[in-house]
Each structure stands twice: as C-alpha cells, then as structure tokens.
Length: 392
Image (cartoon, rainbow, N blue to C red):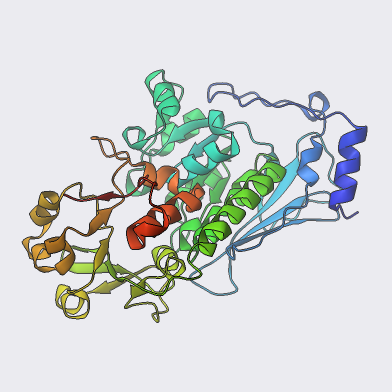
C-alpha cells in the first residue's frame, strides 16, 4: 500500500492522532504497542529538493526506509534505517540490511552543535538528553537543562564516554558521520542504541544543508512541519537573491585561515563558496571542485589573494589583534590593512559557544543577509550583521 499526500490528509480528518511527549533519559521504560495509538504523521510523503545525501521512502510493508549516502564513495550506502511507526504492525519480516528504529523517538543524544540547531528548528529540543560538550551549547534554554542535570555531556570522537551513553540510554544517538563508521559507534549499535549519521556538512549549498532537517524530522514524525518550515526558508533565500539581479560589481574575496602550517581554503563547491557565488562575489577558487576545505600553503594564498578586497571567516578571531596574535603574517594582507575582515563570531560567548554553528545552518537566509551586507552594503542599508562582525 503506497501513501500519498491526499490519503495522508484524509486520514488526519478521520482519525485521532496520538500525542507523544519527550521523556527524560532516566525514563527508560518503553510503551507497548497496545498503549500507543498509531501516529498518522508518519505517513507524510517527504520530498527533497536540494539535498543529495539521503533519501526517504515509505515501503509497501508499512516501514519507512531512510538511506544515508556515502559522500566519499559515490553510489555507496553509508547507513540504512527502517523506521517503524510506534503503534503500527509490520506486514511480513523486517529487512535485516539496516537499523530498525521505532518512531517517534522520545530521547536523543545530539553530538554536534548543528544537530542542536536543527532539533530546535523542529521544536523537539526537549528530547535532547545528551550532548557532546555542554559548555559549547549556545541555546540558553538548553544551558539551563544542563545545569539542572537533564542534559548530560558524553564527549565526542575519541573521548566519547560509551558507558555514560549506555546508562542514559537515549532512543537515538546522532553523530556527524566522517569517512567511515567508527569502532565506538559500532559498539553503541551492538549495545542496542541506534546511531544516526547526520552528514549535512558535506552538502555543497546552504539550502541543501538546511534540508537535512527532513532527515532528523523523520525520526520524530515531524516531516510535515519540516517541509512547511523549509519552504519558507527556500522562498526567503530566493527573495534575497532577487536583490542581486542588477548587481555588476563583484568584490574580490578571500577566505579561511592558516592552521598548523596549512591554510584551509573553502573549496569552490563548498557551503561558503555558494553563499559567495549567490552574493555576487569574485572568488579565486570558484572553479575548484572541492566541496570541503582545500589545503594550501600560506605562500600560495598570499600570492593569489593577498590583494583581496574582503576576508571572510578567519577562525574564531574577534578582533584584528586576535588575528595577528594567531599569525603575524596576516597583517600583510590587504583586507587586514583596510579593516575589511569579517568573522562569524558576533554571537559567540566567552566560553566558546558560537551560535553560528548551532542555528546558522537552519537560518541560511540570515547568513545570506550577512553576506550581502558585507559584499554590497548599499542593498541592505538598515540591516545589522547577525552572525558576522567586522573585526576592529
């Protein structure tokens, strides 16, 4: 049986939806199917417009198949999930080539700042019971929950505290996948904790990254909300692009910074490069095919871009003195001399929590406004930068 939007809407009119509140990490007892009325929001037909990294499909047996594609190996599957609607029955056997997850989930370990931003965007941040680094959370409501002990810090990558995560027992552990599934992640899955890989950071456009909200939404039966909110974002972004239709002047831009002897320059197909392309900038690396950062020497960057008009995003600097302290040679670049250096540290707290990493991915329209204001200030005369600040 295949479900489409008209059927979904009719079901909503005829049947009562069940209501599910997020439970704390200490509440580990799961409701039985008999106690859980079927959530018809599960059958909303999610459609993707920009994102290439995942796909969602409702199967004939009533399960929902979610595939995360491997961005480092074209055509290969990184991980596959079969979502079972809480309160429903599966026709036939459950496939064994993916992880089975009962949804909507009621608790989650969100191990990256971006995931926190997406969960807040969807209105399910109350389901967060564990994070990687509590002191890096920007959201004040979640900070309060950390102080009250409702959200625990469990580390990340090499420092991941396996025993603590198992003790908290979230219904889903979400990580930012990188290259391959790690031994620690496999260990969590073997302990019965599903691990979801949110690889939005490998998408090459701001709207494609934001569309990963639909991936996370699938685990909460919030796909209709995600679709509605995303359509609004899409339109706002398009409206901003229309401001640039008559723009002819293109400021010359450089980006990135030098770290331990290597300058990490955003590649031509990267997230920042798309903002610059849409914002009518002149960026030397537009023709490059790299979707991540392109490693370069300081000398190459100075030779190619030393006379740029504007410098975007040199690390976590908050002043020109901060920048010079990182590498005195930065003062040789024209943007440093003219004071045209902009960094996404305006919404950064002293302890390092930066809202750019948390909410920025789900507000591409606001980031784009910042970019337009920096490149073409005359187009938005009354707008004040939100994420970026001009270093002084």
